[in-house]
Structures are given as structure tokens and as C-alpha cells.
Amino acid sequence: MKLLIVEDERATVEFLRRGLGEEGFAVDVARDAAAASEAVAGGDYDAIVLDVMLPGADGFSLCKRWREAGVEAPILFLTARDEVRDRVRGLSLGGDDYLVKPFAFAELLARLRALVRRRRHDAGAPQLRIGDVCIDRARRRVTRGGVEVELTAREFKLLEYLAHRAGVIVSRGDLWEHVWDGADAVESNVVDVYIRYLRNKLGRQPDLIKTVRGGGYLFEPP
Image 1 (cartoon, rainbow, N blue to C red):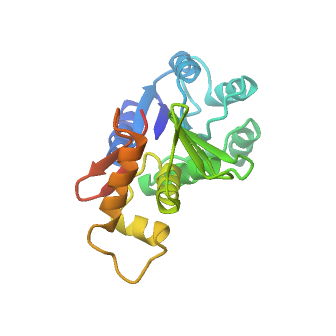
Image 2 (image 1 turned 180 degrees about the vertical axis):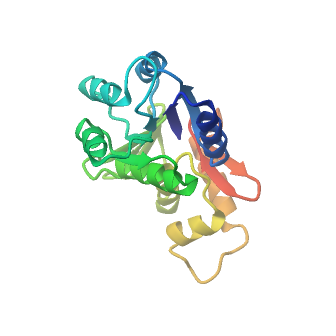
Image 3 (image 1 turned 90 degrees about the vertical axis):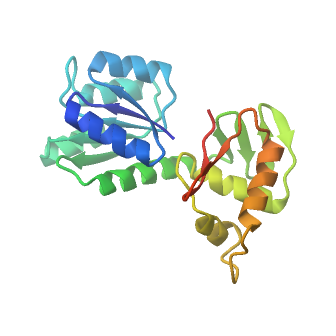
């Protein structure tokens, strides 16, 4: 999952970069309005964390400009501006959420994941595209780089779940609960076996599913 942090306060930047990085996010940082606009123009982000008070232009203006240009990435305002009129303005200009400093990291993380999940679960989008992988949920068809990948029903369900959690480490227990519907007992290697099947069918150049020691699996297309 790729995020853009638009923030000029060094301590906040380092706190967010370290914390979000440890949660499996790929983080880019822009410290002023010009760098932020350049990053948005050249990158495809899953979400943008945007401060309001920035060198060059305020975050409200940037949000308005990006929405008018067709940028669809969810925008979460993270700012010390805590008045109701500021919240209303930010959301009215196209922001998706608004969190006031000082903030709890756990809450920021939960809000970001909810924004990205909401975007990817859009019922109006029968196809889920992540990197060069396209998952057609209506026809239960998967392609990678335009080449069809034949999957069993269980493999398709496993890939779909991993794709919805792209960029987030998913435990074996979580996969068992959602893909195998919480069957009576977790067999020692069933999840690992199906992950191997899926890796082989998707191709390993590069491998899209990473094993996180002690954590589970991470679906992260380049």
C-alpha cells in the first residue's frame, strides 16, 4: 500500500514514516506544496495524509486543486486546525476524513485502512486492479500482465482476500478465518500450501506475495 505524507514538521514526518513503515506501508514524503503536487502528478497513491498549514500553499487549496484535476486517492487531513468550520471546509473540498493533532497513531492507522478498504470494496467496480493483477469478481477471472491465470475457487478466494488487504500483513489465522470460513481446526500447513500454489500460478518475477516471519503474508505488487 503506497501512501503520500504531506507534512513540513520534521518530528511528525519521522514518526509517521517509521510507524507506517513498520505496518507494511510504502511511504513517500512531501514537505511543501510544490513537492506534494509533483508527487501526486507522478505517483499513484492509495491514500494521502495532508497537513493544512504548509509552505507554498495550504492543504485546503491543494485538495481542491487535486480533486478538480481528477485525483481519486482518499485524502485524510491531519492538522492542528480543530475548529468545526475547518473540518467542514476540508471535507467539502474533497477530503475523505479529518483528524486533529495531537492524535493517536492507532486511530490514524485505522482510519487510513478504512479509507483504502472502502475504495477497494467499491460495489460499482466489478474489477479489482492492483499493480499488473486484474481480478474480475463477476466472472471469477484473474489476469496478470494481460495473461489469464487459471485458479481454483479456493485460490481465487485467497487471492481476492489478500488483494483487498494489499499492503497489510495478514496472519495465517486471519486467512483461515476468512478463506476457509473458520473450519474446526487450522491444519498446520494448509494455508502455506495454498499460498505456494498461488505464488506459482501468478508467477514469481517478481513474487507478489511476501512471507513475513512471525507475521504471515503480505500481498504487495511493485
